[in-house]
Image 1 (cartoon, each protein chain N blue to C red):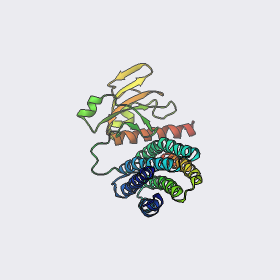
Image 2 (cartoon, chains in turn red, cyan):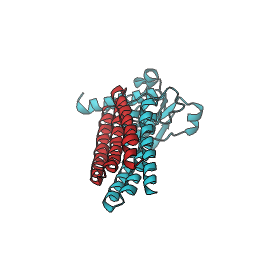
Image 3 (tube, rainbow over the protein chains, first blue to last red):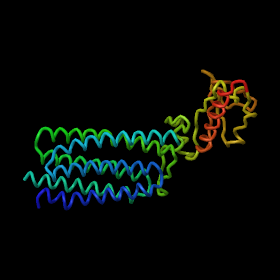
Image 4 (cartoon, rainbow over the protein chains, first blue to last red):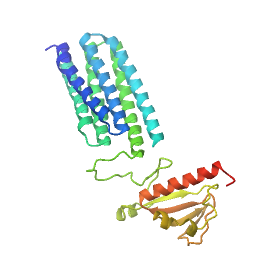
Amino acid sequence: MTVQGLVMFVALPLLSIAVFLAFVRLVRGPTLPDRVVALDLIATLMIGIIAVYAIATDEPVLLDLAIVLALISFLGTVAFAHYIEKRG
Amino acid sequence: MLEAVTALLILVGALLMFVAGLGITRMPDLFLRMSATTKVATLGLGTIMLAVIIYFDDLVATSHAIATILFVFLSAPVAAHIIGRAAYFNKVPLWEGTVTDQLRGQYNVGTHQLASVPFPELEQHLPDVAMRRLPVSGASPVAGQTLEQIDLRRKYDVTVLAIRRGDVVIANPAGDAQICGDDELIIMGLPEKLDEIDAAFRRLAEASAEHPTS
């Protein structure tokens, strides 16, 4: 199996299931920090998806998105944590 | 050969990230879920980025991948720490199988400051009891009253072990000992009661700061 095939038929499905599982946690909670952690995991999984997709399509330009997403998700988590701590 | 290494790294990374997804759904409480997501997902991402470096084999892609790895490896622990901290202060419930909560009674719930236990051996013999410093602000209505009047023993089940006034420590104070502004009470009791009394003192100080005449 080529690397492209592996990404398309193994890596992407695995990562998609992981995103779905994280989404289940995002919906179920039960607490706000649980949801924030789920969002954070979804962002990390998206970075992984972008990276393997860059390999599958042979487009290294997509890696820019991975860095941007990493930055944004970190800022988002910090902001969420700040407000959760203020509220508590 | 390189193709096989790339394939292996992608496979391992995808599996690790899948395990992170399993962890966040299956683990019993927030802190355990965080240990699954933060560690495993970060490792999985690092592995995938290694695959990216080997697959593209050019400077731009390599620098992008290394920058992503470095940033995620630096930011994931920080993000996990602050979320865990915020969750702990929000009293997110721990799993019922939790054996020990070493932060219990060690955090000042009002200021969110961590203080070490003054008597670790006391902690061992009386695991439920904690000691805490309780500052009395100068504006607080508590200042000027005696220990008997504020009656912490009856209201909060808390014992005043000593009053610290500047460099002087009044140990084992009697009921008629008067509290002055800027004193520090050293109190002992259940951690929940200490939190309660801490919050009450803070409210009193804030209320009197807003209405200085009353």
